[in-house]
Length: 223
Length: 223
Image 1 (cartoon, each protein chain N blue to C red):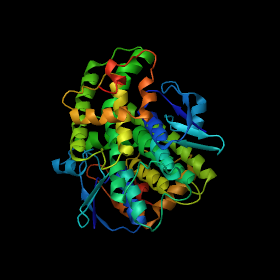
Image 2: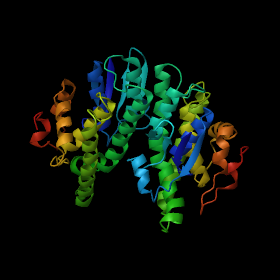
Image 3: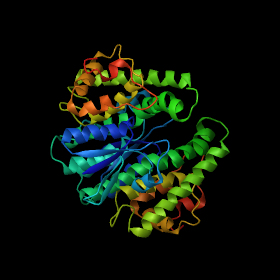
Image 4: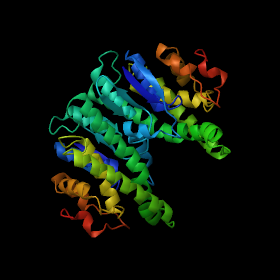
């Protein structure tokens, strides 16, 4: 069985939890604290980032969420998530990168710092300007999601893909931290609500971390 | 023919130039200034980053260096660069992420800011502490390269792969900016010197940008 080294509010770990659940791959969780990583964790992932995962029967250690997603895509046939002709697959991967890099850097990372790490780990005062900037950028990213969903059934095309799981994982962390203002984003809200209703999403909605509780709508699949 | 939107010192663009040359894919270059992107560029890549590329005959626009690399791997048979069984492919992609994210964030991005953007674009004084930190981290990354090359023929295993092209692209930008102290890194220096001698590397070694000239050893394939 796979053992996933993760942090409950790490969006890259959440992407893999969604993916493994959608593909029916069983796994157990090993929590890691991203602000105080164990020395042993660096042996698993020299990049010093969650997620990483180990399969003891196969003597295999994998690291990096995109590398692991591609591995699962190549080795598990059920529910392909990087699907279609090469140009579609490129579009899926472009959107994965957009959310893993731009949305993460603009929105998720500053929210995690200001609303979680500074409160729980670093004991510092949040920077209200950084928070305001992140929430303004969140709004722009959701505008782009609205645009995509108004033109396609799912973010990258006609079928659900790794792009949807990646975007929903990032958004779920920001939503947990109260950083999403859903007003004016009905298209994205409808798409996210469909994802939230899937069995793969339930473990993420019931996750709680010490020192930060989510707003009431976070776990409400009808919200 | 492909038209690659790039910046001469963008390591992600350089990775694709190496890859396309190794795979024998013809292309032309369209220079973009990352500090003053044209509005039209955002229509090509909403993420606002080089590289992106267009194929007019195929009415196709691709963005993100990893998505494009995977597309080329899937559509061009010559010289596979994400090769081998799934576990090897995961190891190649892990190292691509390590260089594209950690090496970039620790070393290449600060060097580009301090030694290029502040001098040429922003007209600010470089932050000597940020430079010192970046060069110290470069040394640690090269230690890890030495370790890999002492145990394997190429970074990710027995054959040259996208991991080597990615790492060499990042290192080449830092070396251009005088940020690599090669002393004590004989293994990596030997590996890099082999890559530098390949025909695919020659256009990168003759690139020059206004306002910053490389040290003499930069273009010397025997250095």
